[in-house]
Length: 290
Image (cartoon, rainbow, N blue to C red; front, top):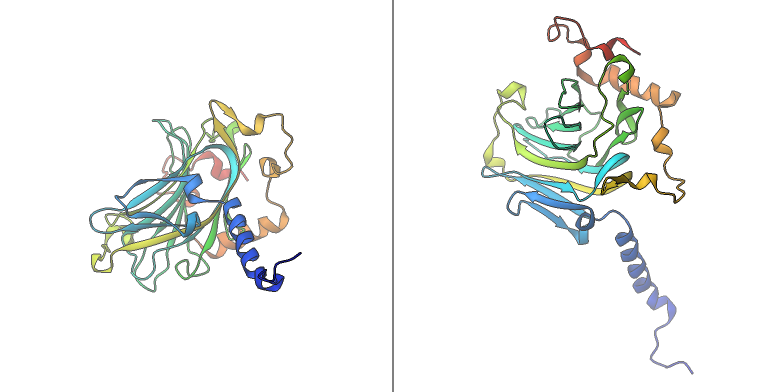
């Protein structure tokens, strides 16, 4: 027989929803589980039960974190909210990188600016220790007002940089034309917030205003649909069937190509492939291949 002290279901519903909500949060990306804060003496913080990570910079130090896992190809998503206000001199870097003198790297770097002036989104690709493949963009929104999703799709055929699902850059595998492509070295995810006022804003002319410190960038909703590399083997080579690896052969469809062209026409501010002064002996070979 039911106790007269039992709560009616309608009274229990908020409690049940709270429990289910907590379970869902545990199942999603968690910064405690997926990342280690690697430097900054407490300036990097994991908050909200692992749902939020913040990095801070003051005159003494910046801060940074890295993924616990290494990846060999994947689709990596992270939501960032950048340093607001006068962020001149600061750089927020979010990238994939391997180790060693012939490292591979896929870069997002956000170059701070004076209040009211736009951030510059700097992208680069390194293979076998060589980069020099910079493209830079303005964004079509204020990246400090809210969180936005920055994604790297890395498969054996191409690398696609995207912002809120809109592709901004594609770097194709053109090894057959003698262009190195990162495909043999597993990479970790890294991010850091640091002072680079010797070059970051207007070539170093604008210095960091330390009266505005601490500067803080925030991260949430990490997701890696990726092949984890562990003990010399990829999780994607296991015999377990997977229906979620469509990204391994993904390419830009017609709509995505149009959106890419829209961004590059309206928001690209630097492209190494058009910098003839920098390459007097001729532009890199990938610049002349469609």
